Image 1 (cartoon, chains in turn green, brown):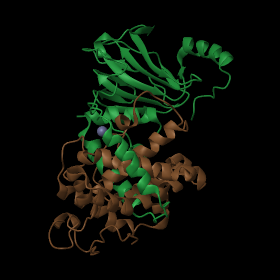
Image 2 (image 1 turned 90 degrees about the vertical axis):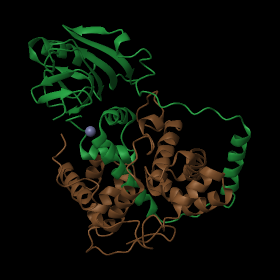
Image 3 (image 1 turned 90 degrees about the horizontal axis):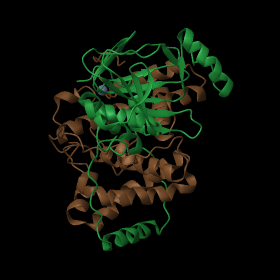
Image 4 (image 1 turned 60 degrees about the vertical axis):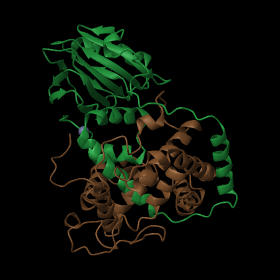
Length: 221
Length: 217
Ligand SMILES: [Zn+2]
C-alpha cells in the first residue's frame, strides 16, 4: 500500500478535469496502486456531480434531441466495434513490459527511456531507472518533477519511496535519489521543465545549458 | 439550498448524523427519489428511448450550462451531443453499486469536455493516451455499494448550501471553470496558501476529505 499520495488539491484538480494530461497520467498510474486515493477520487467525483446538478438549466435548440437520436441510429445500424479492454496505462509504450525497455545511460547506474517530449522540449515524460544501490546526481528542477515508483524503491533527503508512491518535487527542493539496495528502481517521471544539475560538475554543465536555452528561468522558488 | 426540480430534494435535518442514518430507509431516501438512476438503467437494459429523452431533458440543459461556464459557448451544444451520445453508449457500464447517477454523469461530461478540447487542439499538452484511460469512469473499481454512494452524495448535497460563499466560489472555479488552485489564487489576488486552506476547510465540511487523515505529502 502506498505511503505517499497526491495532495488533496492535485486529486481535486484531477477529478475536476483541470489537470494537464501528463499530470493526469501520473495520478492515474498511482490510482492503479492505491485504493485510498481511488476512494478519495470517488468523493471528489461526487462533489463534481453535485456542482454540475446545481447549475441552472440552459435552453437548448429545438432540434438537438433529434440530432442526437440521428447519430445514435447511425451508430446502432453500423456493426458494433468491440469494447476495448482496459489496458495498462503505459502499455502503448511498453508492449513487452518493463524488462524489455532499451535504456539510455545517463550517469553511472542511471538510465532513462523517453516516452514523450513536448514540442519545445520543456516537458518530458520518461521512465527512469537507477540500478540497485545506484545514486543519481544531485539536482534541482526548473519546474516540478512528478515521480511514480513502478518497481523497486528509492530514497532521497526527504524520504523513502516504494512501489506505487507518488512524489512531487518543486524546483527549490534539490535531491539526490538513491535506489534501494536489493532491486533496480524504475519510475515514471514527468518534468514540466528541465532538470537543473547541482554540484561542481553540474553547475559547469548548467552554464552551457543556459547558453543554448536562454529562456530557462532559475529554478522556481 | 439550490437544487433543481429534476433532482431529489433531501430532508434537511442537520442535527442527524448522516452516517448513522440509513439513506435507503423511508420515503425520503436518496435512492428512492433519485430519478436519474432508473432512467440510466432503462436505457442500458431496454435501450429505452423514452427514458433517454427524460434523461436528456433533465441533464442536457445543465451540460450546456457547464460548457458555457467552461468558456466553450460556441461549442456548447456540440458538447451536449457528445455527452448524451456517450451516456447512450455507456449506459450498460453504469452500476448503482459503484457510483451515484449524478457522479457517473459528471464523469461522462468531464471526459467529453476534455476530449472535445483535445480534438479542438486546445489542450495545453498532448499525450497518446486516450482521455478515458487518463480519467477512468467510475465503475472500474470494486463496488462500495449503493448505500455508501448515497451517503457520500447526501453528505455533499446537504452541506454544500451551508458553505461560506468564498469557499463555494473556489470549488466552483476549479470544477466548473477549469481553473487550477494557482489560477484561482491569481484571479482573486490571494496567496495560494489561502486558497488551498479555504478549499481544505470546505472539503472537510463536505466530508470529501476525512478530517482525521494525516496530511498527504
Ligand atoms: Zn494514494
